[in-house]
Image 1 (tube, chains in turn brown, cyan):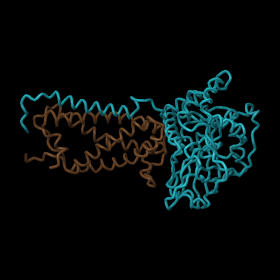
Image 2: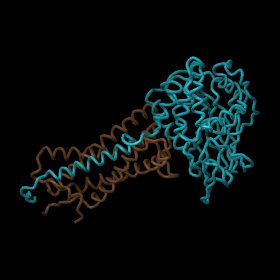
Image 3: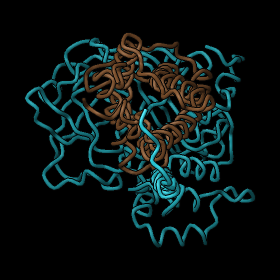
Image 4: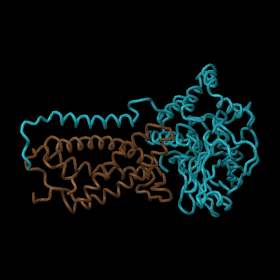
Length: 177
Length: 361
């Protein structure tokens, strides 16, 4: 038990904070396109600032994660599960990074002002191009749905470690010791 | 690593895991509207517009026929007391916008379209942006999005008569006195014979917020300097196809066309969440500046086509009211924008007339 068994505290805090925000974003995103009621305006008003915040958070998290690393996986974990764990974490990080960038990029391509919060307008990161917007808009939804599936798999795997294998993998991101 | 406990069945734990995942999926499906009561989305409204006018790929699903305009907005400073928006501080903002006629047919004949509209994208010296899409009517035919969908279905023109089915329309109007009021209003209102001499209204109420944080409910209108001359409504069908657009292009040759942005402040008790209700009686009105339009271009080259004139794109100091139509307009415009973005832009009536083609600006 001398090897570090846990993620860095900053990673643990960011993980659970971002988990809540990302789930909220997926629900807000899918709900806002489902309605033309008053909720639409309210939800899109949440979607943009949370998305930009997540971009900032993931950049901090990636820096800390690359610097502090991850605790080793259990030695008896089957190679298939090891490969799945590594691949899914790369995809999860990629999704967290890419989703807000596509969101920002598609608003840029559509020529909208990118309002972070009232009065703070971010610069466009892509040229105004409606055809580019069309591609990014489709990608934003498609990747969101894949991301949601990935999160469900990640959650199921985490619970499998916690409740079935009881191998300390879940505790590595959960426990505060 | 810890010793695996002996003879513990993983089944209960696996069921718990499956139940948690299933619950989240079900919640997601509910949030998405895939399960539960059906919702009116931007897509529902866009479908209704397409049902009414036919599907015209590559164009806005409403106000499909249009032309780009450009110029400036000079604020006189009178609006500073009402809103902290930079666009109202004395100074000059740049304007690119679009004149359009109502309906989903991008090649319609101007006499067939009773709706004239002005959409503007105003960028103030502080870099903030204000988008507004205004109609030449002070009121709207419906108050909410469900009624708008019903209206599009009821008003679908019969291909033979080019008019709505009288029985369907009568059934709709029996349930929607507000639309009947709108139609009566349209009958009494003169139809401007030019884009230049029409008054364009904000349709919905908005909030102006001043530097002290005080909020005022307002509507606004662009009041033309040119004198209103009405079209003969009995001869609309014989108007040349691009009559209104041609007339404006000709008019610009003799100089810029100007409007005054007049802000109307709500009286206590004025209805702010229903665009079918006019504010009547005396109101305080403030002329806050002058819109000058001195350029036009077809949509292919004018830099107006590939923007969404979402009326909820507002600078600090201007905000939406409690009118549910604003959120609906935002949702529907966004759907329309996404659909035509996927289609690829089609040629405009005015571009074709001037032999200008191509999708890229």
